[in-house]
Length: 73
Ligand SMILES: [Zn+2]
Image (cartoon, rainbow, N blue to C red; front, side):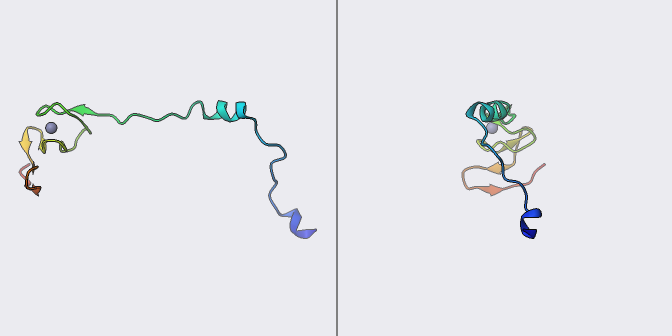
């Protein structure tokens, strides 16, 4: 068989649950890094406008009531 010569190998045996668990033991969900908003003290992403109050570095950037964006900074 000429075709079979160039085919990739199939795994001969399946890996055990233990081996799978050991491999996946280092895979974890990473918590996203957050900072506390100085205006409303909600955890938010660093270097971004606060989604809760719309403030960035003490300046109101987004008016959260009518959702119009004002660039002041
Ligand atoms: Zn805020």
